[in-house]
Image (cartoon, rainbow, N blue to C red; front, side, top):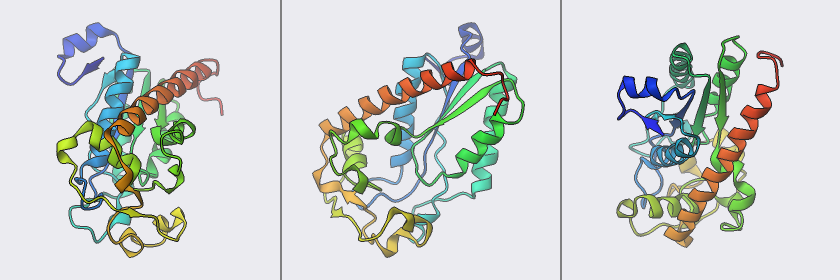
Length: 243
C-alpha cells in the first residue's frame, strides 16, 4: 500500500495504477460518539481496502452532504455540487497522472451526489475507470449475522457504535441509547433527523460491542475488495465508454 507519507519518487516507482479515495462526513452521532465518526470509518475502510489491493490511499475527505442533521451543533454540511466538484477534480488529477482505476469509498449515506459524480466521470471518455462503493451495503447479507436487525441501523446505532468501540474505544462515551423511530428511512429526505430522532440515534447503540465492530470491519473490507476486483475484471472485458 502507498499513501501520502510516501514521496513522489516512491509513488512513481511503485507503478500503482489504483487509488483509493475515502469520503466521510462531520456530523452528530448521538451524545456517545464524536462528530468525526463517518470520517474515521471511511479512513479505516479505505486503509483496509488499499492494503489488500496495493493501491494509493488518499486522505479521507472529512466533509459531506449532511443537511439531514441540521439543528445538531457541530454537524457540517457542504453543498452537493461542492462535493461533486471536489471528487471530480481529484479523480481527474489522478487520471492525468496515469492512474487507471480509482475507487471512491463512501461511508456516509447522505453523500448521494457521489453517484452522479462517478457516472459523469465514467461517461466522459477519459481513459480511467472510477467505482463508487458503500461497504455497509455490499456486506449487508453477512453483517446480518452479527446485527440481526441491521435494517434498523440507520445512524449511530449498534453497527456504528460497535465499529467505533473497536477503532477508537477512548472516544466512545457511555450512554448510547436504543431508538428506532416509527417512520421510514425515506424521512431523511423529508425532515431533519432531530424531529424524529431527538437524541441523534437511529438504531440500538446500547447493544454495541468492540468485538462486533472488529468482525464488521473485517467483513466490510472483505466484501468490498471482492466487489472491486470483480467489477474491474468485468469492465476490462468491455470497450471503454460502452453503455
